[in-house]
Length: 342
Image (tube, rainbow, N blue to C red; front, side):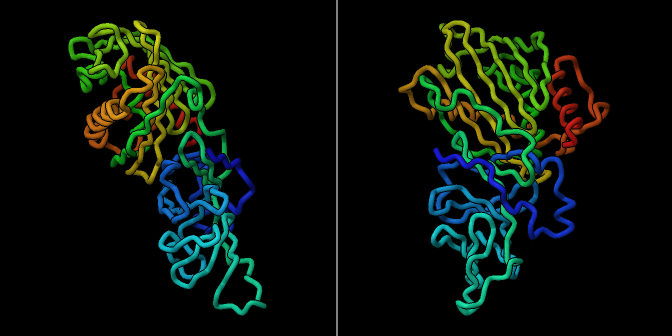
């Protein structure tokens, strides 16, 4: 695994006045932008917080991220190629390195230096937990922890990215809604015959919410590691602002666990992409496809509902929607969002 620690980069150089104003609190957090295994030395376009970016790997295999816009004529750099670890504009062949500096203007004679202003904004880019993460500003906190990553005795199955027509916050808040588990996910995460939400509390620690819920779950064709058809699962959550969930589901019957690590990319106000691991410390030689298919079924059931929610952005005024006692984690999430100015 290649890990790129934050380096001083031209995070704001070359941005217009309007774009500088658009740098907000959400820019100062790490966000996932894709699976690391999918990133090669070929340019890849993505959108984060409404800003179009280009990603690639340099000669050392390090993930790089620039604004996807050549400073010369506004051409998308993602349409170009990578030569000697540098990205080349498809229009005039201008070449940019990983920190956004222009290293070659083919139209200049060799003796003429490249102007200092010929630079593209570069952004901090890290590879961790098999994901590529980008921060558009100054990182507020580190990338949320995935403690089972690299730990012996765990198998990690990445799921296909989930692209939903909603905000990343709506996507993540779905994980705080316990009232829908038995109803919407009947036979998978509960039963419509048992939808009373158990008592639970939420502990807010800075940018994290921690909460635990004990519930009865069905075997779900063996995805839930139980001794019988129904068993007890203790769910321990860490929700890290703005859009990351770590969930460890411990099975009381067997003492084993299934872990979900979920991180959402806020593409824009109305689109989000979710990256999810289904990890486990049992059935280590089993077929990952069963666990991935299980998560895809849950995600599709959720997607239809969450995409219908209006407004797409999470309401910050608690009075805008009706809340029950079992919605306390969702309420805490919204208040944490507001308190951090997100």
